[in-house]
Image (tube, rainbow, N blue to C red; front, top):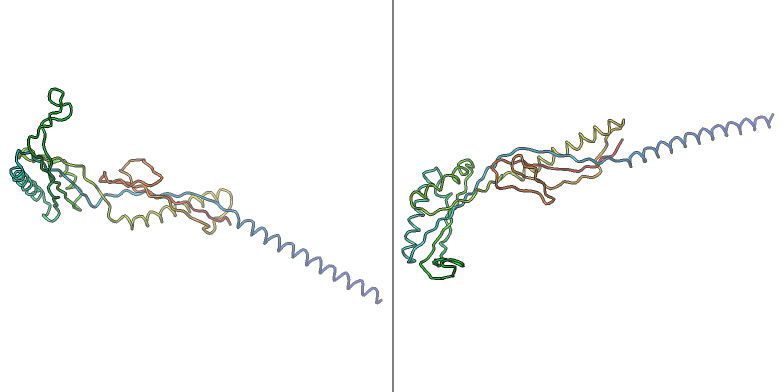
Length: 249
């Protein structure tokens, strides 16, 4: 009887031990499976684009005269400067937005290399005087129009050349943050779609990297590794790119 009881006790112990091994194996298997799955990641690139219009414009023009004498040339230049300033004010630009640089002077020569009779005469005939005028305004459309119309001053005897205006977007810092957020949302959407197609779910973000911003003229497809910052166009497109790595659940 005692031997029979010992056998039962050993049998019970063996059964409990076996069950323990099975449970332990299941736990280890589940844990390893979880660890293994947590090491599976998916990397995607998200992007976002937005149309923006410049809110600041800078235009420059060059006024020049030529005269035999410095004093006479300076007088003529000041007359031209007054005409330019009056013209700009008449177009709605306040006086404080109009800036003039200092006067530049250089000798004026009759002909140049390969000039008269194929020879360089280098004969001084007078002096050249010039000044640069700059207008800065948030009325970007008005500046854009000015750059094309200001040469009307030539009809008033003003020697002026017009540069292409430069257009800027002053709220770029805030917009960049917004664009990174939109590009990150696009990355998450792409990851969700890929994971769903394989019967998985996207987990936490493991890493992310923001690419350079591309600010192009509207409808331009130019891309640079260093980023593009177009200032020649009134209307622009800003594009942000973000690369994100997610875990897979």
